[in-house]
Amino acid sequence: MNDDVKWMVERQIPHLRRYALALTRNLDQADDLVQDTLERALKKRHLWRRTGSLRSWLFRILYRTYVDNRRRWRPERMAADPALIDAFASQPPDQEHRVEYTNIAHALDQLPDEQREIVLLTAVEGMAYDEIADVLSIPIGTVRSRLSRGREALRRFRSHTEGAAPLRRVK
Amino acid sequence: MTENRDSIAEIDLLAYADGRLAGDPVRRAAVERHLARDREAARLVADIEAQNAQIRALYDRVLDAPIPERHRDALWGNAERGGGAWMRLAASVALFALAAAGGAAVGYHARDGIDVPSSLIERAATITPAEAGDATFALASTGRERVAGETVNLSFAMPDLSAFGYRLVARGHPDPGAPNLVRFLYRGVEGKEVSLFMRPRMDPGEERVSTRTVGDVAVSYWSAGPVAVAMRTDDPQMDGIAVAKVLKHAVDFARVSVPGPLDEAAPLDGTGAQMAVEAEAGTMLTDIHAGPSQLQ
Image 1 (cartoon, each protein chain N blue to C red):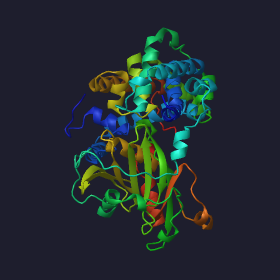
Image 2: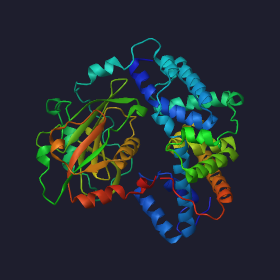
Image 3: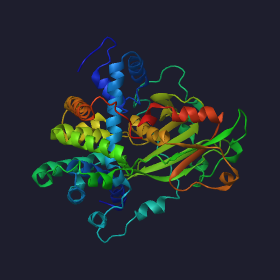
């Protein structure tokens, strides 16, 4: 891998860390996952032939690394910990926002892995559905159906936890 | 998947809420008409947008955190960091290779009356290296006559094509007679190039990606809010629609300001694009900030 490609890989590290954190809910584990991803990418660099985007290739490696070691990375159900939310929320949360973050973190925890992984790629990374299909190596129809079920489950869960109060936008 | 009387399925609503219809204004308009009539659908979209905003807020801080040293070490080892080859290329303006696959559409075909000036498309196709200008990108002071009221500056982050394997190597005004025309030159790891030509426009809407052939050069063109874009590349795998999405993201977060005396002399830093837009300032501000993507 020449320096130019390494430079572009480095640009993706923050995004890889963000998705890894969303998957593992633990920054140390997320950084271990990214580390393994980078090492795999270097070993498999000959497989990237500019036939797809560099981002998709890296996320595909990260996802497969995560799946291969799912037991190792298994979330500890700590996403709703207020301290974790305070540490990683993009803005210092006041009490109202902390409740919202706690609710959405709890709701994500309830999703089956195959739905949560897709919801996170969509919401956190803003990936197109076809790119998600490429990253996860599944048909795009499966992406859509899992996303639909995941979204609906999140709505139900949040509606349940927030009662009749209308949802409000963070920003 | 539930079809309704307007043939708007749940997946359309999800795609709309996720910003996936940005490149399909016809479908997006159909969804918006549906949302205006169907309160339950509108509630679903609002919920999804709220979900996205909250999930992003939960994890976005990581993007601003320093990259752990061990990650850099895994990537670079003890080698020099920073892509020296790219730095050596940064001031160069290379020959444009002719575009591939003459005339083949990379996206949708244009509808009649598309609001991308023919002159922009022809300029993108016919520019020669001698006209390419230098890599300095300063404000276009001569383009700021106050014709229709206030003149405003539009600033946005440099479109980042690194996800496609391309890095910016030069930028500038290719045409001294058109100070509002700017060009970004990107180069890929295999030496292929992508050139984006942009100029401001008054219509805040969006147009799909289309292709026109001028001579034997194919140019993809589209518009994104206040910017008209033409793209020329010798890489047949570069997808105009994907590039359009990247650019739209950059333009969505554009800053608008009324130029002051300091702006006249201050060159841009290395991370942004800036162009003068002659407009009614209030109108342009409203247009830029009223787009659906600003809800995210």
